Image (cartoon, rainbow, N blue to C red; front, side, top):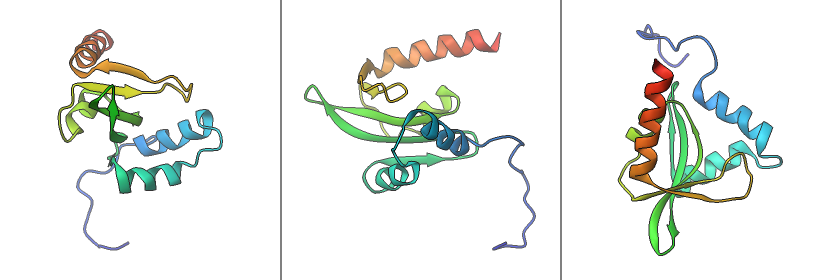
Amino acid sequence: MITEQIIIHPIPPGLTAIQVAASCYKKWMGMVSFEEDVAHYLAYGMVVARPDVFAMAKIIEQEGEPAWFIRMAVGPLDTLFSVLPGYLSKICFCRRNDGRLRVYSLDRFYKCAQRQMKRERK
């Protein structure tokens, strides 16, 4: 151990978000290396890794406008939205490596996510 300091808030039991992301890569991404993708997004995009959330994203051009492309996201959507370093009007992603780029208004996507989270908490 690097430090002898006592951990105040231990990580809760179970899989962390990055472990879930790695297992999703094995399941859906075929020959794509999780470690190589993380390295790529560290160099050319953004990576957020906390016990509760993991995200890899970069800014792309979508129909002449900048947009967030989310390569992988694990965790509560409201927390994931809060870690984006800036506002762009569009968000894009592919589901389970199906090859189809899905493009949404970030505002509309966020409102839909909020409604879904409220339903799940009831």
